[in-house]
Length: 491
Image (cartoon, rainbow, N blue to C red):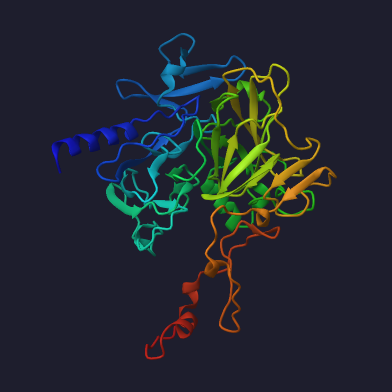
């Protein structure tokens, strides 16, 4: 390797390793320079750190607090009479907000979620993962990339690789062969739920050109720590999700107006956008930390929405705006204009904003509202801000605003409202022709069974874990799956 190549590699690692955790204003995506000819290298350090903390110049960690009433950030300091000192926003570079509480999470290069990785289509991607956690294993899975002929770089533990042990390093190498908006996450235990996730974008030269290109990575934060939720779930103690020792009202699973479950039966404390949310719903939304997306009336802006959560389907609206959806799960579609869209865990929707707003006179900003689907009074809401550089004067609404078109409903009607109309996923049409062999109808007369495992809910019914793992029935499985010439010993 040349000296210049080594220096660039170190520079790229430095940019990722010390990327800013707290970003009040979302940054438009930029394609980094390649390591060499169409090769993009990234180094990711995975650690355990606490949200709402910051590192000082002497590497000491201090606790950070935010007061929504006074809208001030403070660092706890026992040497001062008042016990704290006020911080400026420039002091928050190393702070990951999360839900505004001090929680131990998985960090990637000093932030959670991790940095957004951007590469061009068909680039060679090399990701060096350093597992610097004290004891936890991990793997790294990029969700949405085909990885043709590189199945062993897909990050599924015990199937495609052994987990990356603590204090060890593992390198993934694959071709970015699938254009569009994707994301990465951990695949061992509960690490995705604890912060091991981030956006992964493959730039498609054929996608609509825009002036601003943002990512909005959505996540849901449970009321109780994830391991506790798992314990309660496995022991049929779901009624205690809101609290075990405290006098909480027994928890009821979230459901739609027709009774169908709209997510996993885990109480959600908040929704975060790019790692920023707030743990209480009773504060005025404008006073709590939130992400701001900047644009102007004359500029095209794309927001790539990713539901990186595990528990909830999320409904997205933008005040005074029509949503022009241009891509779903990385696939370019014929643009569809809707009022709301529902995003299930793992799904991605690209929305382009340009001359599709219906402003009030003199309006200069709007709110992006994300909320859980719920008709039981337990809905959780989070907002981000859409800030215009100029004052909106003209309305560009081109369909009847009294009708609400909702994309990706799992049912024909979202509510009983006469004015709501669902746009089903089957109504969407890809711009490029689909391979006829992939979509052709095939009939299997025998020997075909379809099973769904580990789904939060299906057709409105919540998932229940099996009573035992397959290895408890090794002898029966062996008889069904092994070749006749192989012998299996009975238990």
